[in-house]
Amino acid sequence: MTILRSPRLAEPNVRDIPDATVARLPIYLRALNALVEQGVKSCASNELAEQAGVNPAKLRKDLSYLGSYGTRGVGYDVEYLRYQIAREMGQTQDWDVVIVGVGNLGSALSAYQGFSTRGIRVAALVDTDPERIGTEVSGIVVSPIDDLASIVAEREISIGVIATPGLAAQSVADLLVAAGITSILNFAPAIVQVPDGVDVRKVDLSIELQILAYHEQRKASADRNADKEVTA
Amino acid sequence: MTILRSPRLAEPNVRDIPDATVARLPIYLRALNALVEQGVKSCASNELAEQAGVNPAKLRKDLSYLGSYGTRGVGYDVEYLRYQIAREMGQTQDWDVVIVGVGNLGSALSAYQGFSTRGIRVAALVDTDPERIGTEVSGIVVSPIDDLASIVAEREISIGVIATPGLAAQSVADLLVAAGITSILNFAPAIVQVPDGVDVRKVDLSIELQILAYHEQRKASADRNADKEVTA
DNA sequence: TCGATTTTGTTAACGCGTTCACAAACTCTT
DNA sequence: AAGAGTTTGTGAACGCGTTAACAAAATCGA
Image 1 (cartoon, rainbow over the protein chains, first blue to last red):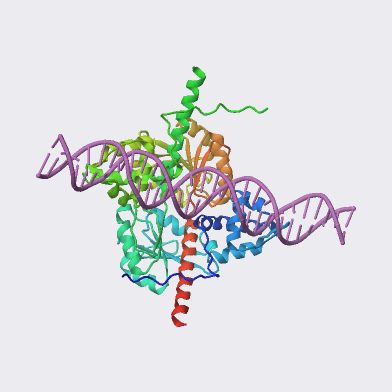
Image 2: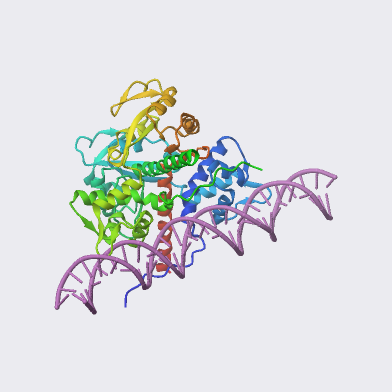
């Protein structure tokens, strides 16, 4: 007989929102922020959906997982809806992140303006290169990787970003997990293995371009076939 | 009566590969490259799947869309399979890309080492800022955005990367499309609208972190509930 | 040569996500 | 007050992607 974890209780407060919806909520949030800046008070699902680049039905279904925050026949109160989504996404607080690897990409990330307005704060930079340690990047002093655990503990950081070469990725992930990090955003071109309970998301720049190249190739061969057809 | 496009012919050469599979093929390719470098000649779906971080059944199903390149009871010939995937992905040729926006992110992208080995070549850099135009970044001279159309035409570029602030994204996308670009990778925090026939993929750095923050928040509230349960 | 073993390729079931379509609920006009 | 017009929220159908399970096909040893 094995010891089982206590079964998850029914938790009415913590609704289960589909992953696909969670991935779109920040897009809606951005659109709503734009509307607030434009002074728009109210807004229908059609308009918001167009701004976000999604089907109106999808938008409404997504929002329905959060609750019933619209008014039939009217639409959504922009400010109110924005607050509800922000709350659901945990943006009522700021989230500190630590970036490991202060090369070109790490530097670009630490300088990225878009984070601050979305509840993300780059709290620490870490590297192994003695040349970089102690230098200041975007107003933050680069710390040695040996200090990772103490930095994470002291500043209560739970999110780490891997911006190193692919070869270093797994060992960096291990260090992050050991330091107490439970969410990792991995920019390195490598798959990292982590224990249960740790989330990993992967952004791979060259893979995105390779996918586009694949579709380009298909377009090109489709054109060739169309030519053949016309010529025939 | 409307004029319809000629219906797509049955094209046995151009099999229809699911999007989800296309997105994973580059991962397999990377794993296979690593195996080749290690001198591994043959490899079973289990091992390859583990390297790629996917279910073995999923790997085999993905590969089955390309054809039947394995040997039952044996596994896959690493070199041969690598070639087949590379061919399918269009990596037998190099794809030139133009990057618009040479800020922190654009510079990081143009310096990115991972592209060249994956059939991607950064062929041109473009910006609007007079301060940047004419300067050299990663060995490439930054051109004014007015030259975009001629650069794209002359070098037969079909893929463009948007690495500008969000506000400029739509107008840059319009310029790219006007210049003849048919695939766009958009790093700007904005949804861009493009005509049919143009592919757009979006990479949003802060959205990825917001998704992680959401899951962190849920972990935290789950912990609180667990505490309550124990205390009760 | 034949049976045991391994591993692929594929079919079928399942689950998640998307989309349609419509009832419910609100506003506005008369 | 009632009907016409809007727009949300959601049930149900559909399609895509994932996974399990197994037959087919190869190797290996006796």
